[in-house]
Length: 204
Image (cartoon, rainbow, N blue to C red; front, side, top):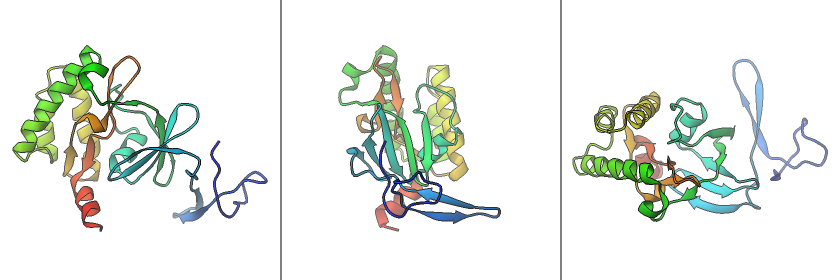
């Protein structure tokens, strides 16, 4: 179990070390404790997220990505294409560990490889046409998918992300997918909000 650091919260067990702050809403105060990652191995770092390997085959995420929050709220459709993300605190999540993909054709099973190729082709076509961002553009892109279950899952995810705005973005490459032991494709970091990405790049 990872330790927290800083002043102890009144409800912590004796000897626990935690740091956090109180968040107020209209009815009560909520105490948020930050997870200490100093004893965890950093296994991934992106624009929005840092990923750390935890004990027990799980990954701890420090992230301000809207897609992570959206999945943790269970707004994404139930599909093995998406990781199951649990909200641990403010900007903190955990999920199962998935192997990173460096050689899609070799690591993915036949179905995963076919879907990856199809999504990659549609994404590349949309990217060069400037249509890989936008709710309507993504719905048009995913509407072309051959497999009905994949089409429904990605259209549903697009609708879920539109709760944050119309500028939903999608990107697929080996760096933002994962795979299960049986070679299933998992879309780890493919969805994002374009305005949030621009703000990050501008340091806003």
